[in-house]
Image (cartoon, rainbow, N blue to C red):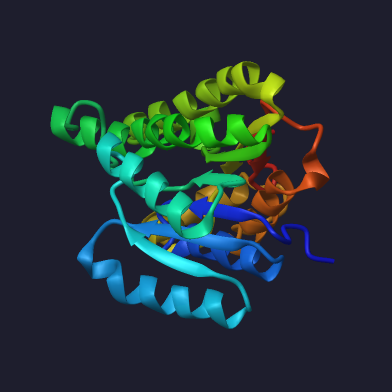
Length: 251
């Protein structure tokens, strides 16, 4: 059974890691997928992912677009509507970390994290809400983090941005529920990706592992499964929730 047959999804920040896994999972379940990447260094990976999506028998297209830039998001959404005809699902996955103790973090580093992680969610949601409202349906999935729920030393900017996503998610669920548009968040724990390798390696990784009841770090596939649930009609009565996929770390 293909849970997203006939649907069109946008996934931001999907050239690698969790975003790429979500794009592939959606395509496996019949969705046409538009996805973004931001740096020239990711262009090769984006092209490879696009080929993988097409090989799965769906329409797949990559777009170089900065989710933290309001105007670029507007252009992206307009381009996707022209190319794909509609937008049923938005996954706000673009994110970075600039970890440092508050004593040492610079204002520019703080602003960069906020723009990429939090303002991007505003930008993309703002632009997809009108076509979704017109269609009177849609699912928005925002990628938060267990760090946004529990905090972590050296990650104040990341934690603040991810906590902000949860508050935003709940507010938009209130605003758009009457239009049959659902808005939920996923709060991953420590997932095995390029972005988290330094947290998982060595003694610090061992300490985190001791705090995870399931006893292992997560995979991007496990996060993609949660995104599939929230994007599909399987979760038709779920909105305004932050689903923690963390192996029990936040218990």
